[in-house]
Image 1: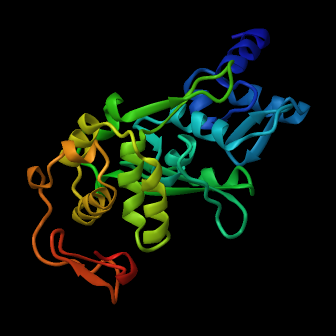
Image 2 (image 1 turned 180 degrees about the vertical axis):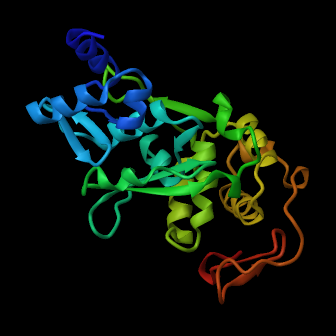
Length: 259
């Protein structure tokens, strides 16, 4: 392949604003020699060993996620509270001021993710802990988000999927009060999507919490789903230590929110 052909192919594989690994680029036919010369000339930046971007445009977290999804052999979604924020339902920063992005996948994520920029933190969640096989590939519960007209969109959980994923972190990094505030904005969830997700959810605490918050607000969509249709496990669960037991869903909740 000639130098001009390499250049044209690299521009297609590595647009401005995205990143790519040496392994992925060479698997697509880009020579290591061409990459090394690009780094020496300054047209290609080596962000961290084995990871590149093109000089000229700062890398954003959207560019990193889109790049990851492009190179990944399995589905990777922005999920949990990060996907709710994308849909306008939540605003959350880590205490350090970094932008925290929650990512869900069935496999481990590459270690280079958190070496791209000090502005962002990418936190991995194992999808198998909450979803049965098939959910991550189901387009009915995924939303595409456009971030630049000239580049591909990236995938994130629908509000229904994102809220269930967020409940995994209650009451740890997400308080009952915060989860309740977000539920206040979820007035138009899809009962069909919720039925699909709840049937495919293998996390008992998440399902019990979801129905407890749903009953608390009793939106029209909640009246169209039936808790008895889903496996909510058995026995009592301490979710809020020192809280009061909700006798319907058998979870402890903060005394201030009980009843």
